[in-house]
Length: 205
Length: 250
Image (cartoon, rainbow over all chains, first blue to last red):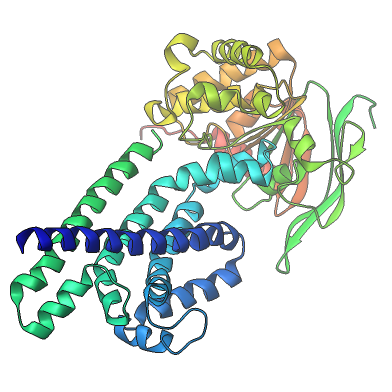
């Protein structure tokens, strides 16, 4: 029984990590190039950040409810969970990357232009390196909150540590709830520390 | 027009949002001279400087550099032939002093050893011991040292023209005077042509071969320092008055 519990915790933790990893990966793949493009277009930027803001305000259970009946991205299972988690992760990643890129000292950017750097060179050699700490900070916030939010994935059959939590709630059994909650909390703490370390490591001197 | 004019500014105007910043400014800069653009804040002197390297595009008139209209220049190539120094130096904080100074040679794809040699040579030129400063980061430098690095960076690819926008304005008076004299010496050694923006009439008189006084976007006076001292336009008189007013104990 005990060893069966340990195996189940391990396998659900892995599933949880997978949910979080894929969601953050996809969200970053959308939000980071998005931030680079939006940094140059003030008007579109307001719309995009507004959209991400709105997505953020939808209660997660309600969002699952909206997604389940949709074709392609909806249904029961992991895919729906990942779509929802992505939507939540977009805003912190996008907003932090924008803050990082737009926050580059205007004098530094002006010098870069005046020295005859091309737009691409300015982006890759100046803006992005200087934005790295902000970008990593965004990824960190997104990862930590997604680890928590991903427990709800179990509500739509997405698996992960939420399976324990929902089971524990329906059985009114606190140890079972904890079997899901504690590993999720540890995961969040480890991710937070790890990414904070990375943030420091990658900060320009 | 003298054939040695490296930079020709023909009736350049610039207006934005219904506001006229520059009004038909014409000015030729001969090789080897330093033209100081003098004026109050908002007189258009910085905008005129930016019109030269294409940071702003004039809404009227034409800028010609090395005999070719700015419109015909590839803006990237044009800018790499003009050194640019601004008030807070605008150094890249994530790069060492050496990397900052070597920027334009690297962009122009010089071989690495040649860039390294040039960096050390220039640090020496601006009075910074290369072995001591090459690997530092900008935040480890004083304001005066940053400005020296900014000047070294602007000189790196040996551009025929230097553009300087109040490079010494944020420095303490002693460092400023020191850098002004070094700038003079450097200019004499390298025979550089320069456009130098300032609001400080003393600096203008010290550094300029000619002084171009701007008032509300109009070229008010254009004269060598000795003649500028005798100018009678109201704006010139105000600047000169600031020179004569001294603090006296009562």
